[in-house]
Length: 125
Image (cartoon, rainbow, N blue to C red; front, side, top):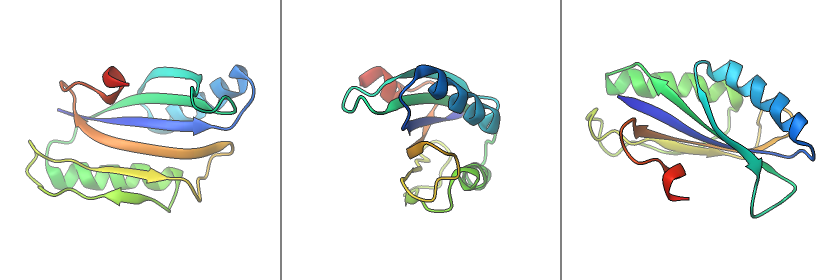
């Protein structure tokens, strides 16, 4: 099974505002699970929101299509790392957006498709 790992930077000063924006994002990604929401250690003017979202799709073409639909909700301007292998076991797909983001106070977003049982980037950072 695959999941999407999301990292999103919020340009806000107060945790309450970051939580409000996080709630908006989780409604758009529903269902998803917030892994963390903290002041970003490299820049204290940002909050870093990290989420995981399970994907039920099994076929690579369905996974990619589903991901494209999801990311277009947030921005139409993405830099994508396209899959090098469309085998469902090896499918890797990621992207970053820092312009044209449709949610106020969101300055940067990234997603990474990963195997649900693999170690997350969250476990490494």
